[in-house]
Image 1 (cartoon, one colour):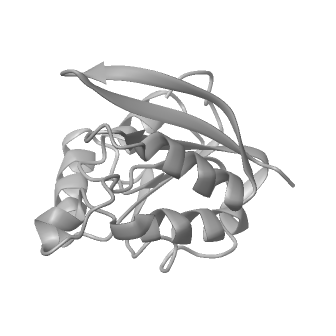
Image 2: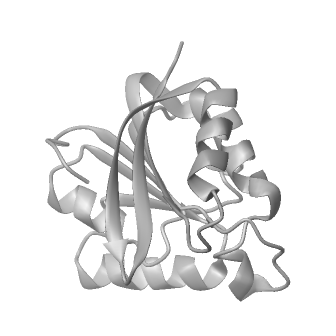
Image 3: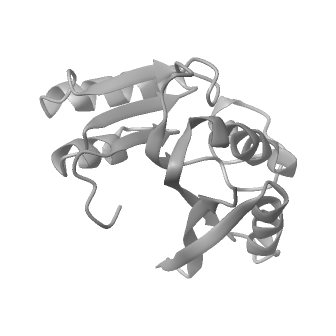
Length: 171
């Protein structure tokens, strides 16, 4: 998460261990909300928030995407750590990595506009682990849901590319 985020409202979607939410608090974000669908992730994040004395500065929700987040909450930045492999998931562990037909991404992008402030951005992580055109597919979906890719950064991860997109609402 680059740039000055002091006093901004941050939503960490798919928080996992909570590291992005913790970083946001440490960098001065005004409001931080962390969300995950996994009970194990929620407990891990809660433990990490307590260990870093941030449990009172981060709202934590167990939620399937935006389902349990109060609608009145709008965010300057939404960090999306979604499963990014277009492959069939057969269990809980697999569902943290696999997103068949990118259905989770489609639901996320459809609903995110309701939670994004005017001028806000989404930071969406994706990977092309199988060298099978994953970036082209996600970029088409981003365009289909009327977002603009304002920039992206590629990170080499053991010979595979992890890409972080910055998205803005086209409207």
